[in-house]
Image (cartoon, rainbow, N blue to C red; front, top):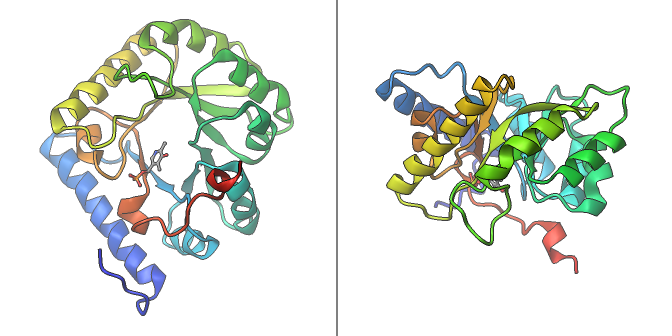
Length: 245
Ligand SMILES: *Cc1c(COP(=O)(O)O)cnc(C)c1O
C-alpha cells in the first residue's frame, strides 16, 4: 500500500470508493443481480473524524463502528450530517445503554439478554433500534454469534421486544477464508435467511461481506456489505477500547 500523505484524503477516498463500487458491480453483473439492493456500510473504526466527514461528503450515509468509546465522539462530531450509525462490534453488557442511545442499528446480537437490555434502555420516543442477529455460521469455537439451531427461538424472542426492529442476519467468516469457504458460509446464511422469511418473519437485511470477501457475498445474496480497509485503506489507529484494561 502506497503512503500518500500529500494527496488530500478525499481524493484517495473517492478513488477507493469508486473501486469498491466497481467490484460490487462486476460481481453483481456476472451473477445477474442488481446492485440496487446492496447497501454499502463504511466501517470507520480507527479512522479519524475528518475521514468520516470526507466520506459523508462523498455521499456515504451508513457508518459502522466497533468500539463505543471511540464511536460516541465521532457520532457527535457528525451530528450535522444525515448519516446512520451501525454498531458492529462485540456487545459488552455494560455498554448497552450507550449503544442503544447513540446508534441506529446493532448487528451483533447473539443472545436474548443483550437484546432485552437494548430494548429496555432504548428511549421509546426514538425510532426502534434496528437489529440483526449474528450467526456463527462456520461453527467457530472462539467466535461470537448464535448457533444456527438456536437462531429461530432467538429471532422469535426479539420480535416480541417493543423498542427493537428485527431487520436481519449478520455473519463474519474466518480470517483469510478460501473462496470455497466464503461461498459455503454465505450460501448457508442465505438459506437460513430465506427459511426465516418463509416462517413469516419479515427480514430484509443480510449483513455479510467485508473487504476481502465482498464478491462472494454479492454472489450469495448479501444486502449489506461492511467495508473498511478497501474504502479507507489500512486502519491508522489502534482501537482505543482495546488499550483499556
Ligand atoms: C472491521 C470489521 C469490518 C470491516 O473489515 P475490512 O476487512 O476492513 O473491510 C466488517 N465487519 C466487522 C464486524 C468488522 O469488525
